[in-house]
Amino acid sequence: TIALQHGAHRTGNRTDADMARWRSLRFGQFIHWGLYAIPGGEWNGKTYNGAAEWIRSWKEMPHEEYDKLYRQFNPVNFNPQQWAAQAKSMGAKYMIITTKHHDGFCLWPSKYSKYTIAATPWKKDLLGPMIDAYNKAGIDVHLYFSIIDWNHPDYRASLKNAADSAAGKRFQLFVKNQLAELLQRYPTIKGFWFDGTWDDSWKNDGAFSDELEQYLQSLHPGLVMGSRLRADEKGARHFDSNGRLMGDYEQGWERKLPATIEDVHGNDWEAVMTVPENQWGYHAKWTGHVKTVNEILEMLVKSVSLNGNFVLNFGPKADGTFRTEEQQLAAGIGQWMKVNGEAVYNGTYAGFEKQDWGYYIRKAGTDSVYMVVFNIPVSGSLRVKLPARTELTGASMLLGNTTLTPEWIGRNEYFLHLPGKTTDSPVVILLKTVTGENKDKGNFEKAK
Ligand SMILES: C[C@@H]1N[C@@H](C(=O)NCc2ccccc2)[C@H](O)[C@@H]1O
Image 1 (cartoon, rainbow, N blue to C red):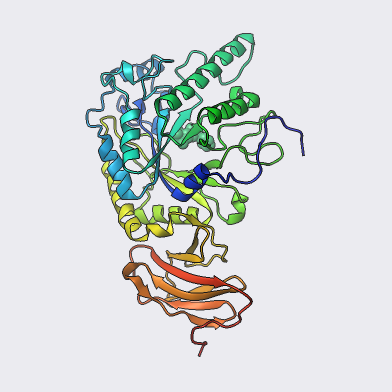
Image 2 (cartoon, rainbow, N blue to C red; image 1 turned 60 degrees about the horizontal axis):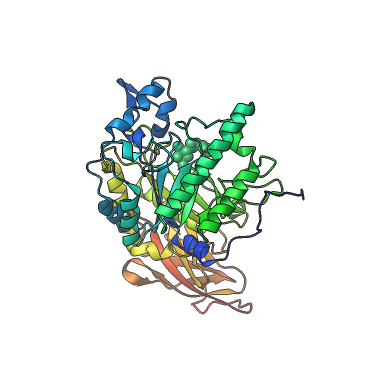
């Protein structure tokens, strides 16, 4: 291994209570809200085909035009209690809010910038009421913070000369001050979700990102911060130059999921997902595929089955309301979570061989294993193959609490016969297992 000062400082996952809590929540809501919701992907009668929150970088959007938008930001229909109620009924257990996206606009009245909510017709802090409402609804809040800041005069993508280096130093102090300010103003938040850390100016100062992470932990012990914050002194990101994960969980799964348990290397991880192909901020015209409730549920369940968290993104409009598609998704997901959420919360990798019908999820530290079925075979029979020395002692469908009698088909294999083959949402079966000495017979009827 290479001697590193600013690589990973820990091997293996965090085992403290704050991290165990984050791990147990499994399902989060991302909220991308800011000035970009005003144009909503359109300007001067033209439609921006990129991600709505990147519209300032579009050649059809003059910087000075975008930089005046704050003068009309006035979310008169913003109702944080309603936002929190919607998230709660969806079954989200934590929420990540954009405090400042790449455009540098702050949703809180920061004393380190003029480009904040205080300069808008709305004037008032948006983060405080949001954090209070979500916490009152029993939902943890994490703060998204972009290092890239297109508004700040000292931001540099790369440092080419002494003047750049001086600006870079001022900018690093600005970042440190804003983050300390956020922790001081919002002491109940549980973590930071850093973004915009791919430019050379950041990548080439691993020492700063390492010291910043340690500084934030000193201010707020237990803070959860992912792998996107840091670089090591060789410029390696997420994984240091010895291949060890930096930060508390792998945070690279943006609009993509790992395929197998091997892909996550035993690390805690989180995936963040958009409803359309690639829109985080509000875009008036969603084009291309818009994910359905069942598609989102499969991503959530697959993530949990692979020991990860899944975060679904919402992009509120400039007035503070959510578009119909997002309201309907929240309701549909919540309907399923009400009955089946026990398979998601505290869910972990079961250690069973993956089957075609769907996913296994083990309730952390127990013998309870859930089967979440997305693909019912034409036979109607679900094959359950248990690891050696594991026996099936019971099976029941959560919906209607229907008992299923497993048919033993040899060694550690059973069939579960579903009563019906049609369903319009995933079927959850709770397996009771026992792991003991090598038993070669089930205690259910033998195969005929
Ligand atoms: C969570 C999302 N990250 C922002 C972004 O700029 N993504 C571009 C990106 C794409 C792939 C790897 C890293 C970064 C998007 O605007 C969202 O905020």
